[in-house]
Length: 488
Picture 1 (cartoon, rainbow, N blue to C red):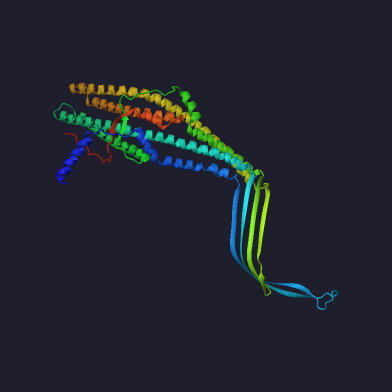
Picture 2: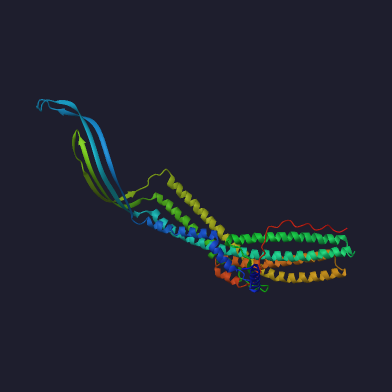
């Protein structure tokens, strides 16, 4: 393909891209990417899977235990010994005879094997029964913790998503302000050159322009930071995101009752549920520790077989010395702990203290859930009213700026008045954008505090996100070139 053909193909592709609709990633899609990628959630899932194995382990201790042990070996032995023996020398039983030492030497070679099969069935072990009940509570804790991690990811993704949009809106407002102040500075220079304004007006315009430049740099830095937070969750970089339209509906929480949300949080908040279950686990730990004072009863059965092929030499006489043996044993074994050096009492005291700590942790999480529910509820109510107020503030600030600029043209307003009006408009635009996202974030936080946050809630919020917005590719910003010195 020729260079001209390549250029023509590139132009056609660019035209198609320019005319095709821009597709923006929405909140649900970003969340689904985070579910696939977030290491915190994957860690919680792995811990949940590990905790599910606790119950089979605890139940296994109550079932029969069978062990088999055996060995095959070759043994060689060589021994020498001396013993005394009485010998009759005259064949008369009435005479004492003679005591003489008798040497004895032995050599043996043997190949032997043996095995031992043992079956044990616990009949009474209070600690194992309590451990089985504790395992049920531990599995429930793991399940609640995993669901809490899922909810936490929903909150983190929503917060990061809307933080990116808020930072993008702030950057857009900052750049628009900088462009307006740049034009105003150029106009101030021209007016000063023809003697219509004083040098102080030029200096005021220049200072506002420099401050706006610094504001744009700070806004770019904030956007880059928020994009990195989102990338950390999803391991992806997004060029476009869907944002809410200007006429986004502002609904009140349902039910519109603060105490109702608090009651739901105290009952259904997953952190509270996990803490409640952890308290139950701690209570079971106390019972397991106290079982150290109780006897244990086990039924056992044992089968043993032994077989040896051996040759033995005794004082020069060599012959076979084979042997085999079979033993079957069955019985009941009872163990009664008498004294363990105080270790059992110490373990009981330790678990009692840990149970007390678990109860305090439950109280702390209940208080935190109540605070989070109240704060999120009030946040939704306040941000809803704040969005409405700031929307009007943006309109009023825009009208005020236009009036101030008109007054400046006819000489009734100064440069300082125009700069102040423009600064007020920028702040209103920035706060309005932030308040809309804070409203949505507080909805997510409220559902999470009440323990009912699911992906379908994000789908409801996602229906508000209808406007695609392209995110600028933010790069590290170098220091801007200084403004030219004022004339004269």
